[in-house]
Length: 396
Image 1 (cartoon, rainbow, N blue to C red):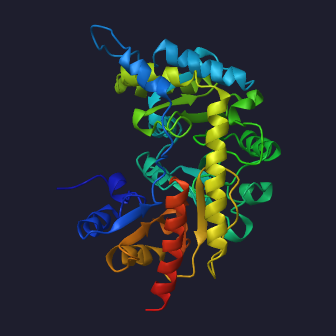
Image 2 (tube, one colour):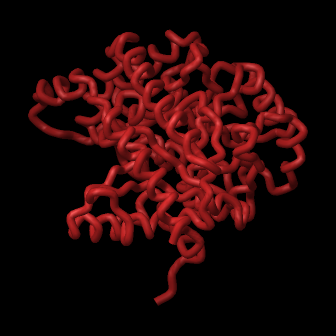
Image 3 (cartoon, rainbow, N blue to C red):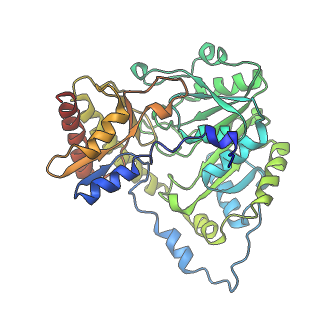
């Protein structure tokens, strides 16, 4: 049987590709410390579950395709409080931020088009682009300068006749790179100057660690036709399983096109929308406590990495990931070895190998992404396992 050329270009998620090896290792009695997937261990606010318990409609009907009014209102107020004002029609509720991004790409990309994204980037972006017949054109960065990319000459040098959009993940996954307000303004100005869309994937907006104010591409009302914001409750409220996100844009024509996809998939689950609306009642103390916890974890990971000879990494300013270059020949091979052949008193560790986070062939081969989503004691142990694993791997 013949399969679509688009799906054949797609790969498996690097965060999940070693799952069969992990299952086999656990079957042998190994304990695995998981640093490979950005699944927070922070408790989801009680408001979510209270809303589910109090849901008492006699019929679980389809929700409206744009989303239920209560959730749209809650998101609108959230942005109002950040001094960013959107009309209700500027907000489309989606099945997670992933669907929001997939809809946005399907609205703006054709076969042969390109979207500029700083690399390394979230690998599922590749799949989303390929299913539109498009591809990612990388903006190169380096671990030696903290994966910084907001340089006008560097960005504009990558724009060509196939470029349709620029995408910025801010704070960055997997790098933790955070743009300053001036850098965000510059990226928007580039998009305006070249008549491009600019997509802000802002799933980690709350997680910045140097006291910066919360920023969004949505603050640039003068670029209403260019800016698309992707948002989600997944990381902000530690509610990844809710699968609630939104696509936001002041571009009325874009939102009209997006509605075609929204109506095709009918609706987003009703109860998850009701419960997610309740999440937006959570106060600032919740975010302050979560930020402090992630900052402590980040500092632990960076301290431990800097104690390992040959590791190259910069301290990330946001999100909850660290991208690091290891003194190994191949991070993919190293990860497989850790699961199949290594343990320390029955323990081993998983991370996400870095090569799939790049579009440029050969880059990231010895890099890894660490998600610091474990509690402090477990994180300390996981980082010790990484150090011992590197030493044992290189001593073979």
